[in-house]
Length: 83
Image 1 (cartoon, rainbow, N blue to C red):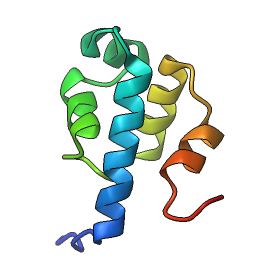
Image 2 (image 1 turned 90 degrees about the vertical axis):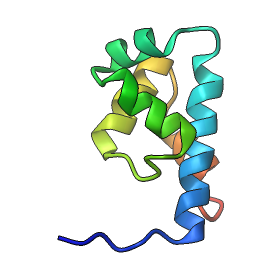
Image 3 (image 1 turned 45 degrees about the vertical axis):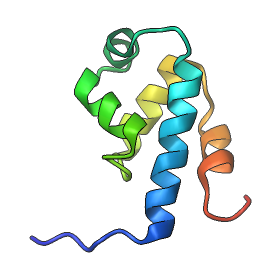
Image 4 (image 1 turned 135 degrees about the vertical axis):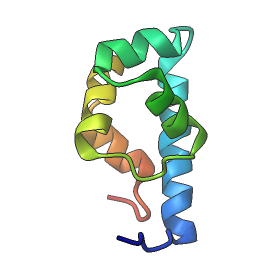
C-alpha cells in the first residue's frame, strides 16, 4: 500500500506537535517519558523531530498523559485552524 504524501499543512501540524511535546518534556529524559507512555524512545524522537508527523492517536494520548497534557490542549495548539 502506498501512502499519500502529506500536505505542507499536515507536516506543519506534526512539527507543532513535536515542539509541544518536547517543551512539555522539559528536563525529563526522552527515555523516561517514552517508558511512562509505553512507547519506544525512537518513536518519541521521531515525533519530536517531525519525522513522524502523523503518529497514531493512542500514541499521542499516551504521551499526553505521561506529560500531564490534555488532549484538548494538544488539539487547540496543533490544529490547522483554531478550535
